[in-house]
Amino acid sequence: MSDPKGIRINKYLSSAGVLSRRKADEEIEKGNITINGEVAVMGAAVFPGDEVAYKGVVVGEKQKNVIYVYNKPLGLVCTAKEADKDSIFRKLDIPEKLIYVGRLDKDSQGLLLLTTDGELANKIQRSRNGHEKEYVVRVDKEITPDFIKGMRGGVPILDTVTKKCIVEKQGARSFRIVLTQGLNRQIRRMCEYFGYKVVFLKRIREMNINLGDLKPGQYRTLTAVEERELRRMVDEGSKRE
Image (cartoon, rainbow, N blue to C red; front, top):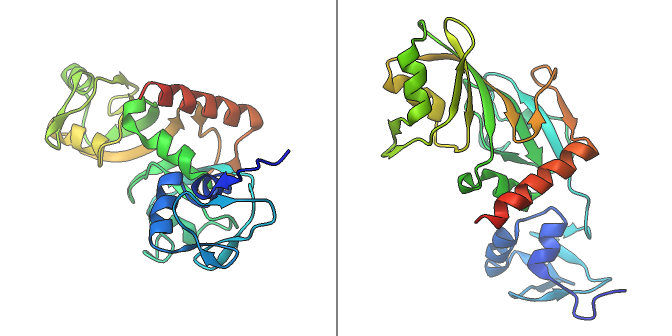
């Protein structure tokens, strides 16, 4: 049975995978949202049969959100397609308008989540929710026990101290690290603090999603089991806010 009060416009746009609720409110303020050709106002309701448009493009009702796992190759950047010739979106043949979840810089590779679900992306990226990201890293010289201990205990960078984290040595110059925050170039800066330079950095896991055997440039959709568990973990994290 239809809701006699309709659906609030920001919720409608979020459910359609077009904008997060916060971003939708911003776009409403700018006059970029219309309902049946009329500029929408904050708190307006959408009823069955109404035509909603964002910047002149009609929005379909409750489009199914999609989530992809992408193995970002070296040399590509997480920017809008129009912003950079090396944007990941210039290399992908995915039809949906996607958001990347947690950027990887040009010199880093590995797992990147891509989705049409703005609210999900925002919740995953909130560092206070403590979502895990796992990386394998290689540095330019032999790793010492003091380096591992220092990396685990918290490193002063960017006017703060990093959270304690899991760090395990894997080879003479390589280690595995699990972070629950996402500071700018965090791992590289942490290593530089101890006099090491990162020569290889690859993200292999985000929360419950593993990169697996995806080759650079390849992508796949999440399985139903993966998506269900991911959303459960995100909801649990949001309850702690």
